[in-house]
Image 1 (tube, one colour):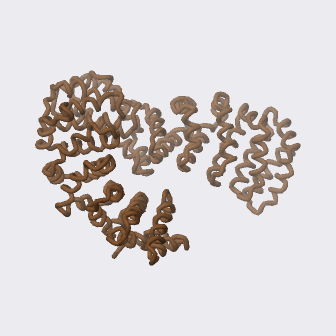
Image 2 (cartoon, helix red, strand yellow):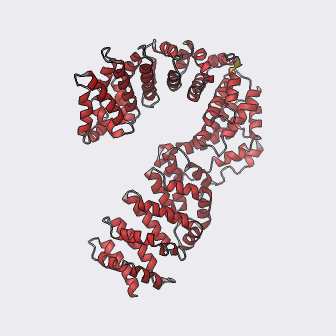
Image 3 (spheres, one colour):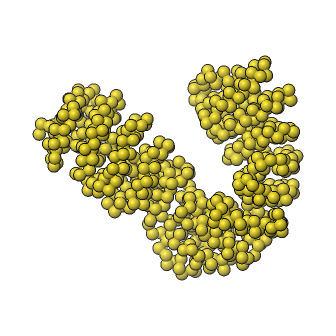
Length: 589
C-alpha cells in the first residue's frame, strides 16, 4: 500500500530516523497480542507533541500496520481503540502527515470502524476522522463517496457529547457545495442538529451553530426550513439571537450573526425584522471594532457588507451605528504604499488577514453606498498604522505576531522621535516585555530588532531609557541568562551596545556590576559574534570624548576588562582583533 511522504521531505526525515522509532514499529509485529498492545500504548506516549517522531514512524510504515490492527476482528477492542488514538495523534502533525494517512486509505478504514458497537472505539475513530477532515489537504468528497456514511453519522449523533462534537465538526468542514448542503439536508441534518444548540457542552453548541451557518449560506431551501424550526419550544431564530448576546464568546456571537445574515439574504427573514435591525446588525458592527482580533474583524466586516448589500435602509442604519465609519478608517491603517504591502505580504501568508481587512473595509465601504456624505468626508486612508500593528502583536497566531512586530521594527528604523515614542506608547511596556519572553524565536528576534531600532541615536536612547530603562535592563538580563540561540544573544548584546552609546543611558550599565560581569563573560565566549558585540559594548562605555569616560575606564580596568582586550587583540578573527585594538586606544589617548 503506497504510504509515502513527498520525496524531499522523506529523504530528510529518513536521514534522522532513529533506532527508537524502528523499535516502536517492530513491536507492532510481535506475535504476542499483549506486547503489541503495550507497543501501541508506548508509541502513543512517544508521539504526543513530537512532530519529528510522528514523521519518522510514518516513513517507517507504522500507518498500514496500525490500520491493519484496527480493522482485524481478532484484535481486542482495547487494541483497536489505541490504534485509532495513535492514528489521531499522527494526524495532528504536519500537512504531509495528513497526506500520508489519506494515501493509506485511513478514511474508509475509520468509517468502517464506526459500525462497531463499542462507543469508546467509535469516539476514537471519529476524533481521528475529525482531525483528518479539518485539514485543508483532505479532499472533503471522501465523506460522500459511500452513500451510507451520512445517514450512519446522523444515527450516531445521539450517542454521546463527543460523537456530537466530532460529527458536527466534520459536517461543518465538509459542507462546501450546494450538493453537499442538499445531501445533509435530505438526511435530516436540521432536525438532528437543532437540539444540539442547547447542549450542555459549549463545544457541541458551537459546532452545531457552525453547521447551520454552512447549511444556510446562499441556500433558500435550508433557510426557509430553519425559520420554522423549534428548539425546546423556542424558535430557532430566537436561539440564534440569544447566542449573539455580549456575554457569549465572540466566536459564538459571530457565527450566530452569520446564520441570521444568511437566512435574511435567502429571503427567509425580512430585512426590517427586529432580529436583523436590532440584533444582527449591531452585533456585526460591534465585531468590526478594534478590540477584536484581526480575523474576527475581517469576518465581522465581510458578513456585515453581505447583509447590507441589497438594502438601502440597513446601509443607512449601519452608517450611523456605533461609529462604524470611524472604525472603518482603522482598517486602512496599513502603509498604503504598494512596496510596503508587498514586503509585508512576502513575510507570511498569515498576514493575509491584514490585507483581508482592507478588502473587507472596501466591501463594507461599497455596501454603505457611495452617496453617504459622512463617509465620503472621512479621510479614510489617514495613517494610524501603528495601532493596527500593535494589535497584531497580541494575536494568538505566532505568524501574525511576527508580522506585526516586524512591520513595527521597519517603521522604527531611522524614524524620528515622535514615531518612536508613539510606538512605545501604543505597544505599551507590558506588551513589549511579553513579546521579549515570547516562546516563538521569530517573535523574540523581531522584538529585539524593534528595540534596537528604537534605541538608536543618542537623544532617543537617553529618552527611552530614562522612562523604561529599568524594565529594558531587566529584559536584557533575563535573555542573556536564559538558554537562547547565538542570534538572540548577539542581538541582545547589540541592544546593550546601543544603550552604552547613550549619554545618560550608559550609567544604567556602569552602575550594574552584574551586567558588566555578563559583558565580560561574553567577551571571552567561544563564539566570535558574541565576542564582537560584547567588545563593541565596552568600546562605547569607555569612549574618550565623553563626560565621565576616565571614571568608566578606571572601573573597567579594575574589573579586568583591559586584560581581556589585550588577549582579544591576538584573536585570529581580524574584526575582533581590530575592535579590541580600537577599544584599547581609548586608554592610550
